[in-house]
Image 1 (cartoon, rainbow, N blue to C red):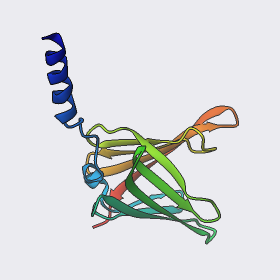
Image 2: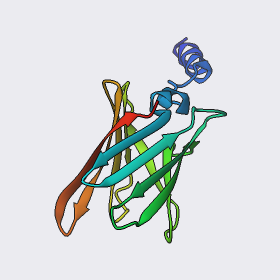
Image 3: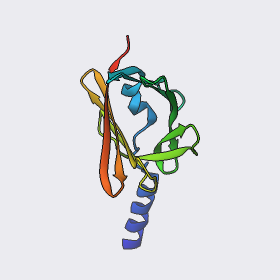
Image 4: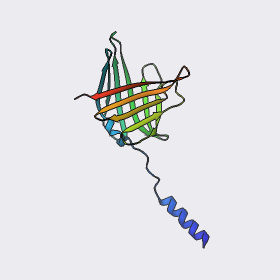
Length: 151
């Protein structure tokens, strides 16, 4: 009788779907065109609305000396979980896996990367807050952005 009950419990567990993790669609609050202007530097970031389980993004930073840089980003579902992949000129694509997924916040992490080790997005009222952080020269460093939506 015990074996029958154990077998039934095992069948029930096998038939129960695993708790679903966060999906790319849960990050739809990041979608839109965003800008921050500070000290003569304009930083823009644009995220496409989730489609087909993926989001694409591009960042542009323009400095007073005329130098402009671009970053290309994506968020996809990978075996490790939701993954933010940064594609920066002259570097190999770098993946960061979602570590927390509270509503209105996404913390992506790659502890093997030199800097940053974490990329964080958060809803800040109607704004989008961004932060990169990690250890640089033996000390924890971080850089913050507060983007306002471009209308």
